[in-house]
Length: 146
Image 1 (cartoon, helix red, strand yellow):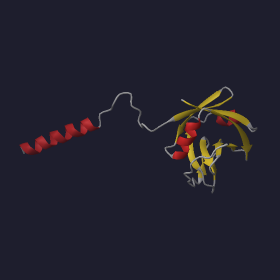
Image 2: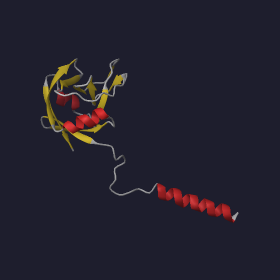
Image 3: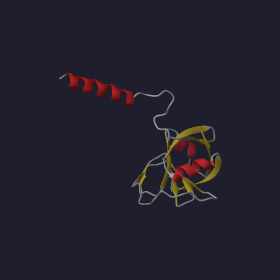
Image 4: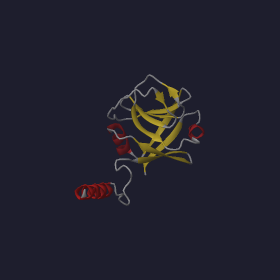
């Protein structure tokens, strides 16, 4: 019985020390964010953990003239290509930032179903005022590191 109690105490102490929170370390060390600004509106986006997002992040800061398409997205063909990590999301969500093909950055401001493939770049954390900020015309978006 005494051995069982000692084993139980050791196990509790061991597992408690393994889950100890370390100060000033983010929940995910690989989690990166970027800023996205349109005029005086600033949004924060969390990047995906893939080579497409990493390569786009390496280009920052970058200002892109974004074209309107279909009343749900803004897009720009980059002068460079990025690695592709295609998925078929089925549903695009307002705030998604995706790579179409290997050089087209797309920012979506409406949620809709799709059969297209994209490489996820990131997602805008708070999409309130996103649709209004992007509007229905071609615009300029500034992407920068935080």
